[in-house]
Amino acid sequence: MLSFAEENYLKAIYHLSEGGSEPVSTNSLADNLETKAASVTDMIKKLAQKQVIDYKKYYGVNLSDSGKSVALQIIRKHRLWEVFLVNNLEFKWDEVHEVAEQLEHIKSPLLIQRLDKFLGFPKYDPHGDPIPDENGKLTTKPRTELALAKKGQQGVIVAVNDSNSAFLKYLDKIGARIGTPVEVIDKVEFDGSLEIKLGEKVIFVSKEVSTNILISE
Amino acid sequence: MLSFAEENYLKAIYHLSEGGSEPVSTNSLADNLETKAASVTDMIKKLAQKQVIDYKKYYGVNLSDSGKSVALQIIRKHRLWEVFLVNNLEFKWDEVHEVAEQLEHIKSPLLIQRLDKFLGFPKYDPHGDPIPDENGKLTTKPRTELALAKKGQQGVIVAVNDSNSAFLKYLDKIGARIGTPVEVIDKVEFDGSLEIKLGEKVIFVSKEVSTNILISE
DNA sequence: ATATTTTTTTAGATGTACCTAAACATTACT
DNA sequence: AGTAATGTTTAGGTACATCTAAAAAAATAT
Ligand SMILES: [Mn+2]
Ligand SMILES: [Mn+2]
Ligand SMILES: [Mn+2]
Ligand SMILES: [Mn+2]
Image 1: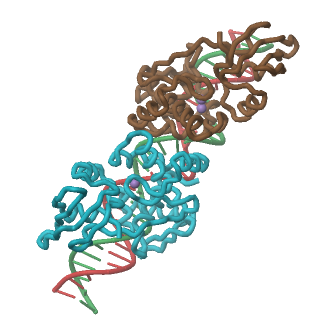
Image 2 (image 1 turned 120 degrees about the horizontal axis):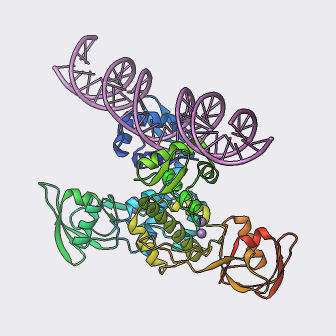
Image 3 (image 1 turned 90 degrees about the vertical axis):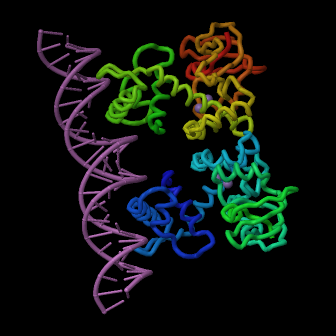
């Protein structure tokens, strides 16, 4: 049985190796988990011994198959709980992450199976992130960062990259939510900011913001 | 912030001091928490320092006001989650306790406030135990052990004393659940067992069983 | 009242998950 | 290539929650 700390490491390794195929470095883990490099080295030795990661000194770590499957189960739980909080307990999308960080560690396969059923087998969480199925399989729709969209490009918001509460509150304020249509009116060369049509309104968003909004196609 | 272990100690002290007014002994805690007396002594020193219990060497412990309030909050969470599991996730009453033992430690006042609302502010959990309100106030209906009922006495099952899965499954089998009417037909002097009318059926139950069934009046 | 038994506490260890400081490896820069 | 900077690991230490074995206190029995 893995501890909360071990589970959090596996989840962090999963997220940090998403996209790229390079091993995850000690420092990036320390950063991500808000701990110290020395602590990371301690922990990854233990995880390597438990065969949930592959570790070579000074090189970095990769999840093993079993480690990846554990990570996906935790992510599944996290996202299912977020759906529950928003759909059933009137939480806003910027309020769920902290609580889900706790709930994701509850150990009960039956609970998750039943929760999934209760929620109607949702495929995406409140931030547009895909929910792995019982086998850890993910179905991700094609998505692009708004920041990378070309002038004139249209789509709808399908997800956000950051679950930071301040960012999500800002999106609420400008009327950006999952499903809202967007169109790139213009791109400002100077600072990378964008003029976009968001629903009915036309507004400017910073590069920082547009990097964290994912749109369809 | 209290750890899971500390919270479990406070809950155990609360339950062990229910009814009686004597302090809780080291050994009874060790028994209840399935740990060793030496470990209990270590922990109660720490809890005394945090002012959540009163502790005098060789004498035993009592919850302080703040400790009692913490214990009641944990019990509140435990029982609300049990209601959720049974009412919404199709758990049976013998399946909920283990999971609730985990869920009771989730720290989020908002979550519990919203869960309570979602459940319709239930007053009792699936085992008939009262749910403390936000202030820790309990409203317990008068209840008697079936074992203490006199011949001819009638009532309905309002709660069970033991959440042990095997016991609850047995109750399911004989058709005993919260709300089922009971009448004491006869008491067997020899072994303290009872002949009872349970709903429409007449059956015999052991003293052991009747001690763990609570009826109204 | 003394001796025996039971209960509780202390002493000393262990494993987990952290930490700081120092040593060692790797990488980047003249 | 040699040096400086950066990244990683080791050494040694702390707090927490456990444990076993031994000592001490309290309760019980003769
Ligand atoms: Mn989240
Ligand atoms: Mn999410
Ligand atoms: Mn319970
Ligand atoms: Mn209960």
